[in-house]
Length: 337
Ligand code: SAM
Image (cartoon, rainbow, N blue to C red; front, top):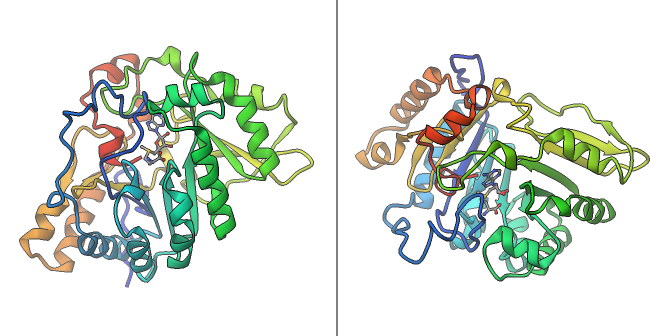
């Protein structure tokens, strides 16, 4: 029986993002800058990572407390072996209606079909530019954007729903907004623009580098007029629009200029099993320790409930240039994007 749980601001626990890998094959300047995540960076050991059994057991307890959707992320989740097996197990959990994946898609070409067969419904593919040079500047690697485009095609061919996410950084890839919008519109794929956020401590975030939803909306409207689309559910992060005269959508995730903490229903589990109640948290709660102590399922649920019931995070609503610089926030690659 499900026993739903609300936090201090009456927000239900509905979504769980699970980072299954802290490593990534990209070094995006806004997420895992190569200067910081260089050859000497120490990533998690096999032993530190939650095992698939531990992930599944945790997910079952979250589902019993109201979680309906699970998203696998990282790091780059497809760097972990046997992800289809994990997806198949998560799909069987009572109450879980949707399992999705966020990926840079470089490894998707080979895995799209088996992920779909395992029960994956949707992928969000991160792609910040079509121009090879701009793409490489954003991703910090020599990989060409074609690798991602092939991954997108493989996912579509396999039957997966695909959305593309583009982080826009002023002066770096804002010239790619229109080409990306045109490309996705022509392919019939929803493109979502993400405002550059001050996640973590290493990306040197400044407000002046954020391209706001308003600016992005104005640019995209040059392609075709946009009409708003009603929200599908409480907690939806993107504000959605449709190109007039087509059924192709475009979305804006404006967590800097139009915050949405009030409807945030997401918990995050890091690859080493720390539970975070906000993307901008300074510390997490050690679920792995509990799992490895040999406690019962009901004790795990009580523990999760207690964490969620105390939750009062609303960082984006309180953000200032000062908090962005001085708060000791966890990196996105660790907490899971
Ligand atoms: N490696 C996978 C990928 O590329 O999608 C999953 C992890 S990645 C951290 C998840 C998402 O977070 C990506 O869409 C990425 O662009 C976004 N992201 C990372 N750092 C960000 C930041 N500082 N501001 C906005 N979005 C960010």
